[in-house]
Amino acid sequence: SACNQVGYTRTEILAHVFDSLVPPSVAEQISNILCGDTNDHPKATSIITRLQAANQVAVPVEIMVQRITLSEQGYGILVARDISARLKMEEVLRKSEERYQNLFEGMPIGLYRTTYDGNIVDVNPSLADMFGYTDRTELLTINVSEFYVDANDRKRWQSLMEQTGIVRNFEVRFRRLDGTIIWVHNTSRAVYD
Figure 1 (cartoon, rainbow, N blue to C red):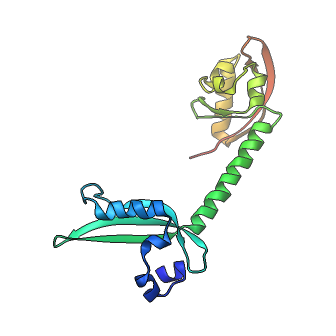
Figure 2: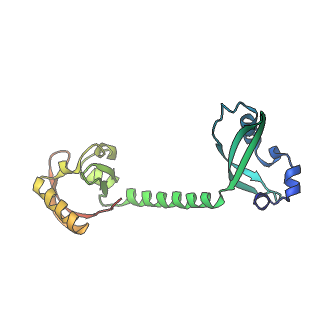
Figure 3: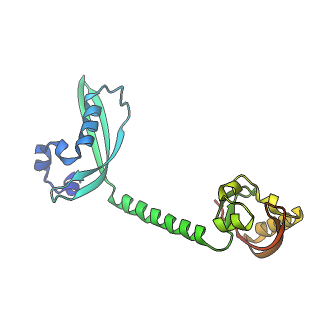
């Protein structure tokens, strides 16, 4: 497996100085772990780096480094795992989250997420503007129930959400920061964790 990762034969790897396969700072970090006191590193240490393959391609890896002592002799155990697929998935996820955030923040309608109890966990700038707030972070300290002009409307909405998990165009009066009342169509969907 190690041979496949870096493109060297077993003989070449055994003859290779490990320091030449990793960046100098990583080689120093590994050396400190292997040459230091086992009490300094009682557990395996994880290092994310790149191995220099025979074809000059740098292979992203997670190296687990552990120093052990057997019969008063120190040994180093290094396990390198190719993380190319994981890094690709993380990049796909990062781009997906970025697209979602851009969509969420750029919508010209008010969007928000709350907990079951009504604590606001996220709002977009349009909602903050709709309710008269200059900064959307101010809304993260408010419970959505404070917006309802009539507390019974919130109870009706909650009942519908519990029955169907989706409520569309629920007409309700909300109170803005300055006290003015606005009518809204509130469309909601429950997301269960």
